[in-house]
Length: 388
Image 1 (cartoon, rainbow, N blue to C red):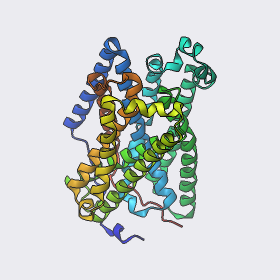
Image 2 (cartoon, one colour):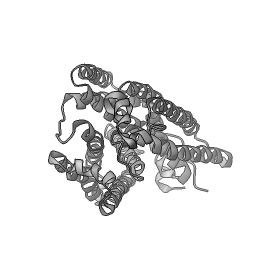
Image 3 (tube, helix red, strand yellow):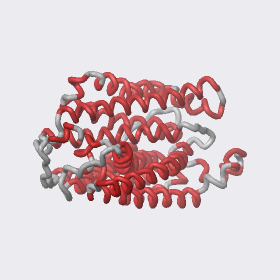
Image 4 (cartoon, helix red, strand yellow):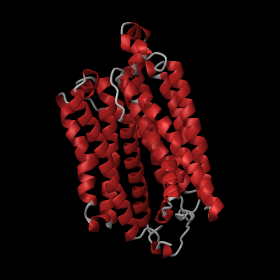
């Protein structure tokens, strides 16, 4: 048994302050109003903001069952105080499905392949019609979410039951392995459907890993931010020790390195092969102001978290860990903006209410769901299964 689990167990009932709930709901409502105004005034930009908010929302929701799976498969007993947070994150997946159904309405504003005239005049798009069409796009989206919700709920149920003993460990490992296998296929296809197909002539076999690395960074950053905030409020001070904060800092360090490694590998492979169908993606993102955002994206998502979390005293500091986690969440939004906005906006960088409104509204809605779910059960989860 890990000696760091010897801290006295604390299972307080915690309720989100009403003022914070009201602020989150108000922000979500304002984001929805801005989106509705945008689809009448600047529909392409508004739908681009909606897509960014949707992908960010799904990333955070998927990070919940993903982390639970990793905990059970690795036998990470140190992660006991983290369990309730991934459970609460996964509770947002049904709402993500509803948002995804809304995205179907905007396919004609976002995706070139959804226009029959564009397909008829383009041999490559015509070749991709059996896969890239609105009907198949919609069916696949529903399938993705049904699989994620079904297995995610089983994982959360096992976590809440704090399964122990050989039989409990076997069940949790089996469900976790099934989720990881399903996620590898569904997330690969979803990343193509929702983001990569914005550039229908571009392709990359590493793009799904870029999405996965972003999910890991944003999800762990959110878990860290919630835990350090609760620790400062005194709710989990006896459980979230400096040793545990050090562990979380190390994971943030590793995930930022993984994100940078995938980003560099994709960029380098495309650069040295120099195939026109691949290089166009980065040529657009190196023009004008996009060329400025590219290094900023690397600094925010990799350089600052990597350098900050290299220092042990900083990893054990609640204030610094909170700031790094918050920066990584901002970095995830920037990364999505660089991936999604160029095909919609062209060579000119425009970031205004039509992009920020739907994004802020989606994140506020996720925050409201997360905090409500956290308030329904004790904050300290059951014992994670020990490694066999």
